[in-house]
Length: 453
Image (cartoon, rainbow, N blue to C red):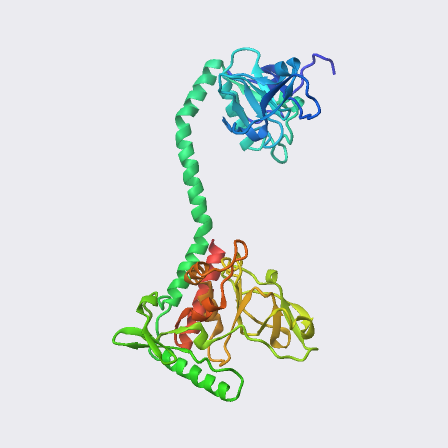
């Protein structure tokens, strides 16, 4: 092919342009230099400030704490940007560009291209072309995009060239609409944040309705929760008599009198109306976790029993009820770990696992028992009278999480919810059949949401 022979570039042209426009290479319009490479051992010339890609952003510069290096007279001429020069990143965020707007000169480091037109042009127009090419992936993008921006790549970039008067009109029009696009970007960002958080916010609301008795209708034929609590207390007395559990000398008993809520702890009574967070149906009761559940129990098993072992990564977060386990022999995990068994509710107590709702009802352990990370609280129904998935719902509510965060103890990064918070937490307790209906309804709603969102 001859030196002056024409070559078709139809496959390079990315879009059609008006008849009065032309396609041209950037190197036909601008000559350019890159800045000086860092070299601490070279101390010839003047010690001057310079900018790098970390100072150059879209249409602006961050000039705090500029660094210095030595420049010779030749390097100053080659590496100096003056007002009106278009500067483009070769490294860092490839293709990011800005026009140097200041009346004073600045030196540039070698990962910045300095573009200076051969003839008067509307430099702002070319800035917007770089912005377009970058954001559609033609610079620094994947696939057909230019991966790097060497001098050769920069020179060969195809630019649509309008008449200079039209370049100026384009820039003026962009300047008019730019405030609106910025407002749109802010609105879009807020909308994306809302959309991303919407599923979790909706699930939080559904759980709150569930534990307030507003998700499923009450059935007048259900045995009221007051009788359920009496059955729990009777069963605990039996277990105490058999020596299987110990008596809590200050066990909480909550009751209503004169339209108020009172709590009896041992021989002491007090009104707790200021602690009741919301109203519940008449067939429900308020109770402390410690009055219906055993907290952080220990298992007694033969050493050679195969059990499940659950480190924290095997306990899933979010609003689901999933966990996995590894098989171990009891003798290898009985010391130094948290104990649990099938139907226990486990709740991560350390940040950020607690906030992320790492909690589940334990299921399908080998021989029904297991152990795991020490960063768990375990809730066990020793009376076998409760529906534990409902207790899990309580532990995933926003109120439970928010109040737990307020009760955190420990240093930053190692904060935890203590056993006392769990033990004293007030539970709205429905009749047992309603507990089951609530859990089933929540599960159906959440599954539908996961399919839709």
